[in-house]
Image (cartoon, helix red, strand yellow):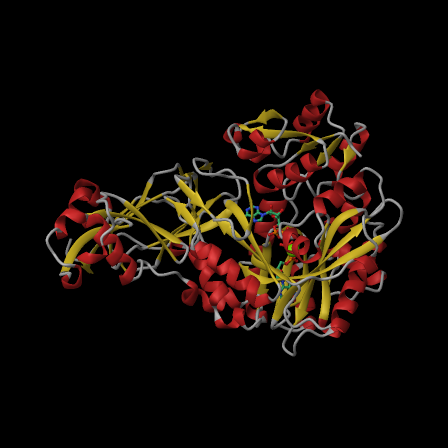
Amino acid sequence: MIESLLIANRGEIACRIIRTARALGIRTIAVYSDADARALHVREADEAVHIGASPARESYLVAERILAAARDTGAAAIHPGYGFLSENADFAQQVIDNGIVWVGPRPASIRAMGLKDAAKQRMIAAGVPVTPGYLGDDQDPARLAREAAAIGYPVLIKAVAGGGGKGMRRVDDAAAFADALASCQREAAAAFGDDKVLIEKYILSPRHIEVQVFGDTHGNVVHLFERDCSLQRRHQKVIEEAPAPGMDADTRAAVCAAAVKAAQAVDYVGAGTIEFIADASDGLRADRIWFMEMNTRLQVEHPVTEMITGQDLVAWQLRVASGEPLPCRQDELAIDGHAIEARLYAEDPAKGFLPSIGRLEAFDLGDTARVDTGVERGATISPYYDPMIAKVIAHGATREEARETLADTLDAAVVWPLRSNAGFLVEALDHPDFVAGRVDTGLIAREGDALMPPVLPSEEVLATAAAALAGPQRIAGFRLNAAPQRTARMLVGGEPVSVDFAAVAVSPVAHDRLLVTEGGQTWEVTPFRAAGAAAGGAGDGAILSPMPGRVIAVEVAAGDAVVKGQRLVTLEAMKMEHSLTAPFDGHVADLAAQPEGQVTEGTLLVRIVRDGE
Ligand code: ADP
Ligand code: ADP
Ligand code: MG
């Protein structure tokens, strides 16, 4: 077994890898950027090496810095985690050329699966069913339009170098094709430095089904069953589960066999995932599941597979990288119960899922579910990296048991003063279609508004908060059964609220500030008077840039009437587009944002005032 391991990553996955490495007696070495100097993964590792400035392209993406850190610390192996350099075949080769063990597949396997068109061609040759489409080198727009028509609308244009849900456009008819192609190529060139596209049949009633595969250097390949990752927002996974709801034994056997065949076709070693798209209009059927792509690394959602199989996939990776055979044969693997994972993000669903940046003053996910996280209370969520703060994973004997545990855990989640998507996740987990296992990749987009968590806590919770704020002295002299109704004015998350409450509900101490958690959301509650001056910020319609970025669209003009939730400005920040929306009905009083303008955190973009102000 390797004796030391450098983890070329950050956040929850770095902590996850350190945990297993430590259990196996392996010395761990973290790397970190300026922004991560005090991060959890740095403190949990045996050693840590600073590798550069905060932007990933100046630290976590600089192969030379990581190799130097490995040489300086005498690291025997490098684990890349996911994202960053994990699917970079040149980096894998450099690691190997430096005499360091690469915890991942052979560079040739990464290359074979790196571009979606070449990967699909390879799979066709290996006899794996692939989504029908055009994979040619001829990228002339007229040719692509003819191919799209031949495939039949709707089609999906995909960047061959794409990933992370970017570089994809659904096109419903020929008239929309040229514009969609141009915008897809632009996005692909900017994000991946390669504007080549392929065209696929857009599968209706689509479900994302993927299979965990594992290979070793002795020629063995097994699968660890499927995951269903159909709950997605903008083609990015939000909730994942294993096994897939409604998967029968024959269909499972067929899709898992196809995955093993795909892995064998590229001599796969280590952990990998074969992603399939299923047409689920008539349930899951083996003849309606097609290969989409392979991710040649450990997947974000690997914990659901660990929980249904009882295996530690990071331990498998480290054993395989050390030259050992796979820990289990296929017939020793079985599914036990059901597991569901939710990705908890520091983001605000009410503001178009805008990342929420800053210090995490309160953070508590209880102890009923598995929590894979890279942060703790007091940590700062920076604008430099993906704002995922934790993965919360529940296991149960049945799907319903796992679902209830996960929903209960997220319902009680405390994330404050940053906003999180926990309330949104609770609504998604409780949605009747999810409860019934009727999932497809369009569910979140379709049900968007229905999944928005409430703006304020329930009357019942507000009444309890009001009583606690009022304190015991106010009710001295009343008998318990004659508790008077009182009315309190409070600020709840900055919004003025009046609430009737029974004074009997008092807690023994009076507070001037409470944190109230309900449905995965946390609000600060203060008496109205105490907030006094601070209240200026409350109904304030000043829309500030929440992070450094670039304005890519200004969607209103000065003086325009706007309604609550209307899009005002779209920013590109953290490699994603974020729309800023009107906090209430009113009109545009100031318009400071300029198209293409660079903005720093806190820059005034737009000011909305209520009509009459
Ligand atoms: P997986 O397939 O392992 O679940 P995803 O498909 O969600 O991962 O994402 C693919 C890669 O893109 C991951 O390695 C992840 O680190 C990265 N990624 C995911 N979401 C974002 C994001 N919002 N911004 C930047 N990178 C992201
Ligand atoms: P990425 O590399 O960004 O993960 P994928 O090819 O895996 O790209 O596709 C991401 C998501 O887009 C899938 O999980 C699925 O929801 C959707 N998708 C991809 N291909 C199709 C298709 N042919 N029809 C319908 N949806 C698709
Ligand atoms: Mg994918």
